[in-house]
Length: 391
Image 1: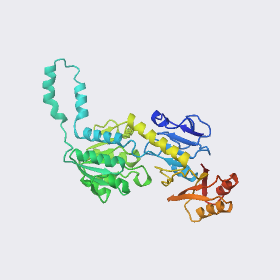
Image 2: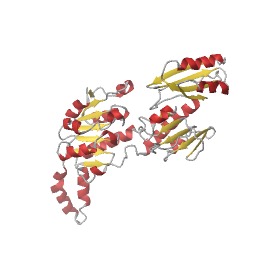
Image 3: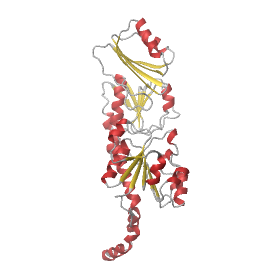
């Protein structure tokens, strides 16, 4: 029986994936084997030694102390792409709001409560509608920074709207490249993209390399009159620099999902209350993906969509007696020492896989018979081994 502790309100579509025969899932379980959460901040929380994995029902993991957990051998999962369509649709809405006088027109109409004659109102609106004129998206250039699951979907939609699309992503994966429409012009650097884009939308993770990537210097390069959209992470944009650019008349609008006090009471800022992934479908998709990944890891040791461990998969062989998994510092000799301990104790290895990612390595070893507690204890004492499990 595995114990899974929940934080936040997790969709029942995800929680129902855990079978009652194998899992106890609740917000107050003792000695949890894993956590599943959305935006709850784990920084500063004591971590029970029983925890082996954390699954984030969403893409970002800045609410999880990933570096600390990695040192403890705790695998951190996220759910990339599960909320991509929800974010894509909100970005499109933001672009439309930023190009037409939609919000202003709505506010104006709602202020006409003193009028009682429909014909009179119609004549007034015909006279005043030019105050809410805007621009069409067709023929404009959209710059997409970050061409992963969300960025590629936005590229598709923008092309369908008749826009020109340019993109920049220094960490573009092979899978993402295959998803990307060939009409997207790839920029060599961020500056080239900013200089030619009428609309700029950001879809990169919040990491050290992207902190304040939109700042006073990059905004000076941005095309005059551009609309900046940030539905990725608050930390990648310097809000003070954005306000300075708006005040100078360089940026025309800033549309984001991350309100800050400095952004309030401005007609050129549309700040939404972090609703990018707040759709019923997105929450369900994220919860299902997080639950499935967590179960595969707890039951089989397989890793998919981890932000701190390598992707590792090995089918279960019905003829094997047990599966040993272990993580270790990514240095030479550790795997050899583990195999030596198994050989010395006559534990026959049937199959194995070893992968590394940065400073950490992860291994799955299927053995003919379940090893004794003494063998497992010996494995945990090997220098540079972080955590050992028997499944």
